[in-house]
Length: 228
Length: 301
Image (cartoon, rainbow over all chains, first blue to last red; front, side):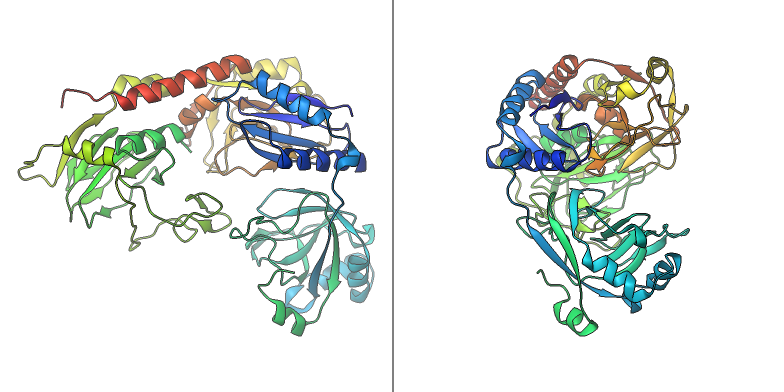
C-alpha cells in the first residue's frame, strides 16, 4: 500500500493513505486506525482519522520526529486495506417533523416533493461515516440522496437541540450537542451521540454504516436520553 | 492556552504539572480564601492584589483564611494562571479536569465560573508544606506572606520576549506559491478581536492559494495556521476542532505556543520558519529551562 508520512508541526505526523477520499482510502484509514489502537507505537499520544489520512500525535520530548516517523512507517507498512475490521451498522431512530423537524416542510418544498417522501428518501439510504470532527461526536456522513439537498438557513438558529437531524446542502448529519446552527432540521433522535462518561464517548466512528429509522413521538419519549 | 505558565504556577506550589489551575483572560475575578492557602500566579500580569496590597506574579505566597485576591488592569500578556497547593478539585472527565466550554462538560459544571461559585482544593503535597514553611511566620498587619519559591524576571523574558513566532512548514504549504510563502514570513499580522480559545484570526494580509484544491478534512494541531477562502489566516489554539478542511501553511512550534497565548487582540505576530529538528531542539531547551527555574530556590527575598 502506497502511503506518505510527513511532519504535522513538531508534535504530530500526518499519514496520507490515498490521493482521493474514496472507499479505498476509507478502508486504509480504518485499517491503520485499528492497528494503531491495537498496538500503539512508543510515545504515541493519540490518532485522529481523516477522510484519507491519519494524524498521529506523539510526545516530542520522548522521541524525535525521525525516530517516530520510522516507527509509524513500520506500523503502516504492515497494514493493508483488507485488514480493516468489519464495519458496524448503527441504526439511528428519528422522530421526523413536528416540533423536532421545523424545516421538514421547507426541505420538501425546495425539492418539490411531499414531506412523506423526504422521510422515505432519508431513511432508505445507507450512509457511511467518513470522519468524526467539528464537534465531539459529530459524524460526517456520505450518501444522502441528491433529491433532499437544501441550502442552509440564511440566519443560523442561536441554539439547535442536541440530537437534531439536519440537512445542509448535499449533506446530512446529527447535532451531538446544543449549539448554534444553520442546518435545516427535519427530525430528532433520542440517542446520545456523545457521552463523556463512556469508555468510548462517541457513538459513531469512522467507517460505520448508518441507517435512520423513523419512530413516532411515543417511542421517542420512551427512549429519550438512552443509548441504542 | 499557555501551558508553560500553568506548569510553572503548579510547580511553585508543589503541585504536579497537570493539577487543575484557574485561567483568567484579561480580567481577573475576586476570590476569597476560606482557609489558609499556598498560591501562585503566573502568565499575564493582571495587577493582582491581596488584601488590596500589590503582590508579585511568578512567586508562591501564603494567604490567610478570610483574605481576598483581586485583580486590576492587564499590564502585560493576556492569560493569567492561579495555582493553589493541592490543585483545584473538580471531577475528572475523559481523564481531564479542564472545561470544554463549547460542549459544556468538564471543569466546574462545564462552564466558566460565576460569582458565588465555591471551589475546593486537593491536599497539598509535602513539597508544598516545605515551600510554605519558607514564608516568614510573623506577617504583622498583612494577611499574606511571600515564600522564597519564585522565578526570576530574566528567565521569564527569555521565553516570552521574541519578535517572531517560529513554525514548521504546513502539510499543504506547497499549495501556496513561493511568493505567498515568502510574504507569510515578511508580514506583520495583527490578532483580530474575532479571536478566542479555538483560534486567533489574523489580519494584515490575505494569503492567496495557487492550487485551489477541494481538501478533505484531516487532523490538525494546536498551532496549525489554516487559510480559509478569504485568505485571512486562523491560528488554531487550545480549543481547536480536532479536524479541519482548510489548507495549512504553517504549524507553530510547541515551544512558541505560550508566547502566542499571551498575545491579545491588537497585538502583532511575525512568523519565522524553522525545520522540525530545530523546533524539537528548542522544545527540549525550554523544558530544561523550566526544570532549572523551578528547582532553584532564590536566596534573596
